[in-house]
Image 1 (cartoon, helix red, strand yellow):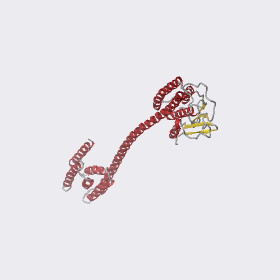
Image 2 (image 1 turned 45 degrees about the vertical axis):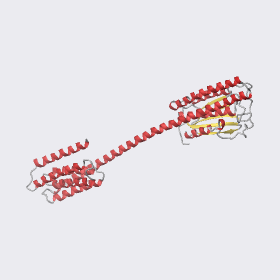
Image 3 (image 1 turned 180 degrees about the vertical axis):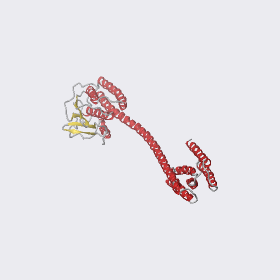
Image 4 (image 1 turned 90 degrees about the vertical axis):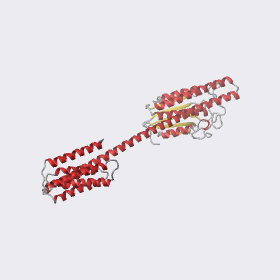
Length: 412
């Protein structure tokens, strides 16, 4: 559409140039046929130029040659007295050449027009000083063409940048979807690992009651508790997925709920201390600390049953630190009638009454229920968030310390 309009404007301009040349000026016996021939030849070259622009009907060299001929014919005749109007044809040709892919095209057409004007002065009776305006018009046309070319290049670059930005946004959306899937998979894995670890303790206790004590009633109570824990695990999984898309409960509130649940299920005292001004954390950081607390409490129930656990949450100026500790070594034997859902499993490793429960007997490392690697997974997650995780014996106690930055993710 724009191309058609452009050629329509050129045709109208060519007609107006002819009307001015042959109706407002008088020529001598030599100048009139020269102007008529130049005007007719310009029309033929304009038609040829239009044909070259249809599809790929011509090469760049052919196009440049036609434009140079247009500028030459119009420039040579325009210096004649009364024929200056025809320079408009060369003006249009020079502008179009200046917008070409190569700047050399514009300079070539400008040079042809300016040289033809100087040669035409040799056969003209016009004042040479007045005729100098024709090359200046070609120079102005060349600058206009270069400006038009720069605008086109800038528009093409802007379009390319917009396309690149759209591709980048599309890639970012795809990466965000993959990242969300990865985080959901990690949360489900952690919740199931925690739930299955706790279920393992209950099933182990039920087996001990059935095989060693033939206490069917208490074994049924333990299995009932295990069933309830399985149901809670499913609820926790749904809550974890929901928390990834919405705001999580305050961290201190979540830890208090976990402490109360641990005391109810395992008969151990959990002391929670919160120091510093509470600050909201991103969901992934809060969930990482929650999962670390869950894993540590499960380990405490497995390896140090009925022993007190301390949970310390500290909000610092630059980070948030969660510390969980429980005693190592031989401790006070469990009560004579422990809660039915937390009997002491006789074959549990590192139990308080087991010979390897001393600090020397424990291996400092990221171990978890049944020799798994839950704390290793927690450590890797915290590293991705710019945090750290340390676990090991310290002064007769098993200590787990998790730390995340308060100002969002940092480099690990």
